[in-house]
Image (cartoon, rainbow over all chains, first blue to last red):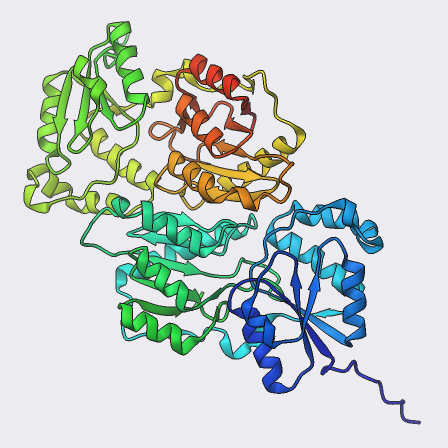
Length: 287
Length: 287
């Protein structure tokens, strides 16, 4: 007697896009619309996303997860993705709904953890509600950097050495759950990425870095972005875009290096065009 | 027949103090004067030290080590100590003396290395000239932080957790020869120290850090300073002073943590007084 067919979960159930700042959540929403997959953009209090007006939005507050989960259930959401930058919120226990009260120990632990741990806890909370987590990189796999130099400008040998040192630094930092980026010029570390993000790091380098390059005629340095070793790729994959290239140029750098296969390039064509226009290289380096 | 007595090198030979910025070289010079030990303050081109006028000074240029070593020999120097911050110089090969030409491969390698490697190479160059390297910490051992909380203000449990996380971050960074400091607030890394130094890091935190503390009523965060694991303590021991405490206060931090036995406190009484006045704690933490 043949076994009765197993019913698979519907892969085309609605997708909840928990949207932070940056280009990634918009690209996910547009991708869903293009593929006619049902979706909702979840926007937490305090985040303003002008692009979201054209999309179905669920406003949410951190203190009321019960309300959010009810809305996602009503919309038939089966999957959730976290995309873009979200600041750690300031929780007001006075506003907690019942679900938040029950989750309070987990929520407070998440608030005080490194990025990866916090995301893992939040992911577990969503999974306990029957939603599966899917990484932006899976939904936008065509945006993951493929290996090679993408620009007319090529990295020099000195740039490649700087990239190797930056990769070692990012890896060491990742082991203590900090950052996904570093700036190195002529072997000298000019900055590492902390929670303020890539743009803040590049602004720091723009203001303070120049005098610390040993040879003013030598290599200008590189920004390197890579995922943390062992990080949960379902949640927090690093991403760059045209703005990253412009900020690297403003910081006086020679180019941008991303780990091939581990970083999203948002608006690849525009990013490459911007780099070519500014004379920077963009290199997806194999780890 | 008894062996003839071995002649020990004269421990009271003159001391060359290769002086960078900060308080440390001045304290070394004053210590020599107080103990009536002969000494010379070596000041490389581009470094201005107003306090040095009262002391015997040898001006030096990076491109003419032969000239410098001759001067140190004439003055009877047997030991050299490196103290204070020195920017990596921009070497002009046109100005090289004969010694520099011979040392060129080493010099260029030092220029492109991490701090520790650069210092090791420079140390070896001095040792090859018959000068022994002595650490500021040995000459000023009474300034090395002894364990304990030195201020009236005590670190809270949350501050102690932040200090532990900062120590782990500094250790990870040290393994790739970067930095000797980090700022952590409520478990969140707000900055790591790169070549620009502690003050630049604290300025970055002052400008960008506040919104990233999850709980505005919670712990303000700590600056932690520690030597790199395995670093050559003869050369580059981290140091703090009253200015560090003031900068940590300006960055909104709760206190300053140094690794007991591994960090110099310059002007301890004044540093403690400043911290007490500003309500910060100063804690020499056992690693």
